[in-house]
Length: 141
Image (cartoon, rainbow, N blue to C red; front, side, top):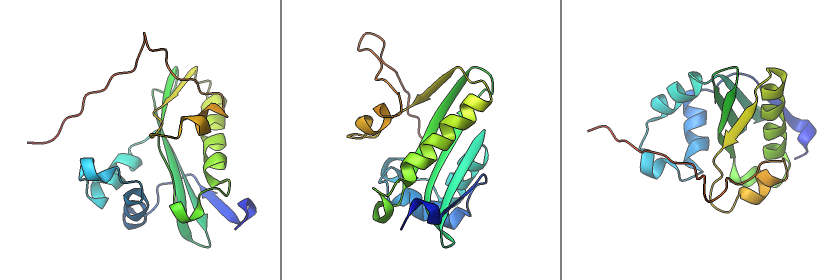
């Protein structure tokens, strides 16, 4: 597959397709989100970008943002069978370009374990140890 064979769409993919792609990450083991919940999450994003090859969803990325200062790139996913072919790089380039076109001043993301070197190629830097990011995970009771 070549990058030229990939079609990019600025809209969420169907819930079932995104659910299948998201499951390839292993992230849903902790979230336990249904395909409909995942679809709602991506549909409520500031910007989404889906990558298709011959009508099949092979990659996805989204941005959560206030539209002025800050943006968080989330869920950059490429089907494992399609990794290493430039799809993730193209998605990330396009997500960054969208932020820049809107004047966003700070772009954040959380890199999956072992993936920080990929993001560093695009200019992302790890936060200093004396200023770490923090998170809170909540689950419905």
